[in-house]
Image (cartoon, rainbow, N blue to C red; front, side, top):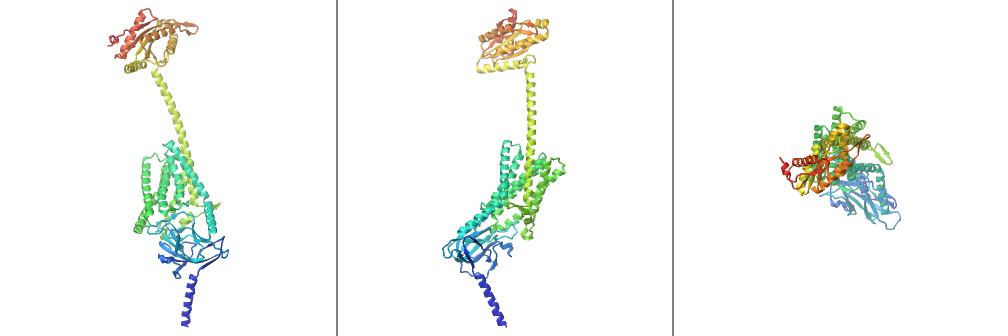
Length: 624
């Protein structure tokens, strides 16, 4: 009986080995494809001989390719491992020669494919300098026309970091095999389905990118509105992360994740400053300084985290990278709750907000609580085994094939609320700017009116005494500098006191106004005329010699004499006496010039009035 039992056990083992070693027969391959879900022979470790079709792998473990090895008893397995499967391919068209292809879904992390011991393709690069890729479509490999063989897949799984559950590794889904035409069709269908399931996500991210560009361009136009720059930073982060991690660009993992960490920091820091502005905390120096310091530390930490991701594959750095990753994760967690601090501080200070800002504060609190909770439970889950983070990220429902999760809804609501609040803030700012602009214009107009009243005579509108004397000094300096002649005329209305005594002071004021208008119309545009005092007028004639000045004085005298000034039904007529002086390279001051022209005017009065008299040519006799 013992002998029969031993023989039976030996027979069962031989049968099991023959079952394992027996090939997988795929009959009728043509337009359809066949899923190689298993069983596959699996073994951790590495030996190049395992690719040979003659290698006996009957003692290896059997696994399904429909799910990772981490869910089939090899959790937290990293490094190299092999899959093997013996296959017999029979085409549906009988004996006609036909090419076969292999379609491989995502594999963690890099791998090589061998067919009958020959390397037919790879994805990424295996150690000693591994390269593995993120977010890529299914990979196609040509098997040729060989009908029977052994398919071997050599897989390398990167070392685990703090947020890796350890449940992945190897195949995420089973490969497909079939004719080249069928595999091409299957790959196109898979790519179409991938695009369809993410069209909503792509559309939202496209809107985010447009908003980021518009906000940045608006900020360039008004650099003082920093809220627009932070809006651009917050909006551009998500499309950038999409391109780096989820857009099938087949970027190397170290590049994609290393660049994504600073982008995540950009999004978080932009949210901080947006909350700082929208919650009216930007005017408080202390909280603003704390925010800037935290932003600098957080950005530096995320850059270092990206560097650690890039070097974590190296065996001599793996242990250190995991330790530093745990430390940085702790500090990142502290910074993740900073928006909650800002919202809490605003509530503590009892800030009064409008409905849009309250909505932003509430949604920011909700969104950050979800992110912080998810971030916390993801860390170290290779040890805890918690799956709640995956449940939070899993879709609650589907919209035309697009999965909508709770985190997606919270992030979308926060983004919409932020854009609405920023729009309201910018609109309010523009209204305030317009009010300030109007007030500034009114102040400028008031200042111009005050300056005009300070520089002009209130009755005639001509330059007053102070300004006309200052202009004389300026024109004398310019005349000496440029070597050009300068003439000055002092005019006085004859018997003006009689006008006031006979017709009243209002009639005298009317005469002064009309004579001022006569002088203004007769002089050149660049000549200056001012009321020197009482009934006296001082005129400055640049680039004008004595002959021209005397002629101009005579024209002014005749124009004033012929002027008809009506005061009601009363006709007023006056004459004017003129003193004229010409200055050429004179070093005397304005006072000497005025004395000289005043002396000439006195002589005109003594000569019978209503005439033009030239002053002495030597001005030095009038200088004190």
